[in-house]
Length: 317
Image (cartoon, rainbow, N blue to C red):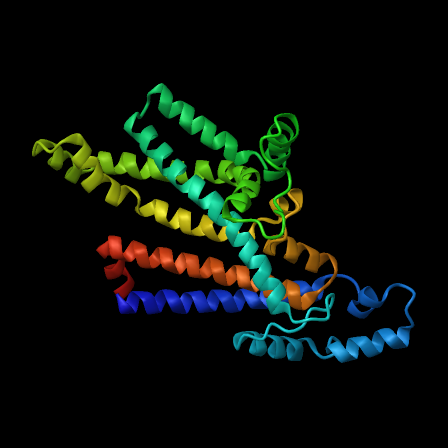
């Protein structure tokens, strides 16, 4: 098991390094001059050059990358060009806000997705299976901004059941915060429900058709016991990977939702940093999301290995 984890951890570190290279290169390729963007189009050229020199953006690209990644590795994310302040507090606040929204969506979509997949598999070929499959696939292909606008019109404007802004008043309690996050979480639930339900359904169908399931049934075990003890344990293994990757998406892929619902999360922070050419904020934000995605995938591998010993054996080989 230790060798399995070390192999996965090594691959994760390589992935993060490659991501850091891509993020840094992408930031360098963005058009425009940083000093000019900060001082404005009418600023003196000498002042722009001095500002670029102070920020170190006139140094060779490899020197800039080495300086940035070495500081990032020890927790120093640098200073924001736009806010003239350390990046870390802004990033931590945005990450916390995105985590709250992601948690609400996660607690809604995972039970619903798994339950939908189980019900569909147990009713394979019947109308309820077709309905759940079609609804899940249809919801998956609808972009978040489309479903978000429709939900705002229905529940926020016409029925006025839910607030159209995800930003709650200062000092609000837990219940009020959840109330403001319900509407923006629904488009995420619609997007992810189909993925989770489809993977759960496929795993359930395969497990129900397996030899060990037939053996358990022939032994006379009750159907509920067979499903709970024998089918679900194996059927949910593929779902674990899907849930892990979608959890990372819930943290970092919220740019559209956060913009649509006026929510200050890490997705909106990355978008603002890109538009303002705030490279330290942009690079730190994207790399942080990448680290979260990698940790989620590593956790899925760990849980997958614990539930399925054959994975651990394959890892040692």
